[in-house]
Length: 271
Length: 271
View (cartoon, rainbow over the protein chains, first blue to last red):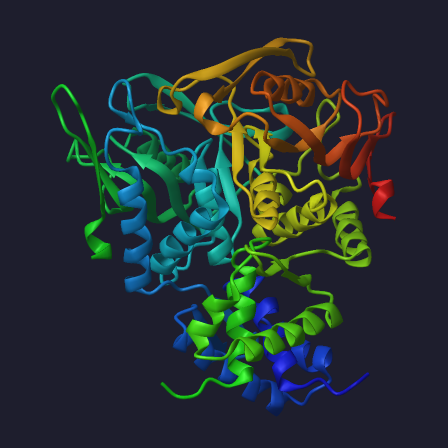
């Protein structure tokens, strides 16, 4: 095989690292792949670290120790996060997307990969520190953004269902009070999680907090700690939610009167 | 700003291209970002094209014309696809994951980002040619893999629901015959798609084909053509499905007798 130049190693390494975010990859993998010495690969990594920093493209980190190596985190800077979210707020504000009953149509935003991936990276950036074992969401609308967050965190996604399914095996069911005040069921396969893990809850919408509260209680049944809660959108009213400590990307307020409008703003922690 | 070296440009460019798969990016974007001449950026792209090819990491393509530029497609080679799917088949075969009624538990596989992204890339590789406008799936289990496929194709994901929701606006509902023989409802927001688009259907499981047939009929209501159908798993029985022309990654057969086993195999087109 021809000698592989640094140029080529940099491109290939960036692709391999970013394809498995937040996952420590052993240096010897790259040594073998490139037929290069460890010192050379280490230099490559130093260069790559500088590059992603210079262009605000995330972070390349070296992890020492027995299970050491290098990992890529698609960390989003405060500035870029704000820019992205401000753009979304402009798109979602106004009367065009308002539906009867004061609901906002944004399902398209919640399933456009480029937007969803960026939202997932912004949320993951806020939760690299507690370092959850998995992301939990409740079907359906939040699944893509929960998946993108799980991807950026390098952990599995776990999906709670409205009812238990034959293809999920034995399940734990709980009842919870939904936003509309109804008693609903939430179900999760016994195989989905293990005791003593840490969960990050991610969902698309936070209003009263009934569903989120249900997810917290579901995790308690599994002896799992909830290490954080993150939402795409939360309503300003009611101000008091059934859960506390949640982060959202945007807040929603619908003006009253003959011609109601949606006021969508970036959440405070992004400013 | 210091002069940016080719090494650095290669890493940054790879990240920017792969963050928006199958999306043509104008060369002038890179010229500005790197403060480099167009000829230099063109050389970088040629190098990058060679690199991803050499390491089997997808394809970097130059698109000519007014809206021209460069795009990255996470094309998976037949060899790598087969290797990935064979690994999954080994993990899914046997008796451990079999549930009462001959169902197979693989929800974990369907929501582990690294696996899901690879499956999405394999499916996208088969459908870059018809070049669909969006990916359609039916809630819930197939959403992550449909999202990953949409991401690799650079198109939106559209999610059909079991019933219409207030936050989706006015919707088209159809009835269809599910696998269990029940009449069920499938609903899609009017805003979700436009007339004369092309859809790629992606879902996790194909047995009788009732749900897939429902999705085809739903698309007809919107005057949308179905340009392909892709599934993670299809059962060998019944051999005759309600739809034809579907591709799946794996086939499932459950042996009969006292100790049933799941036989999971890569689909023929991957061999």
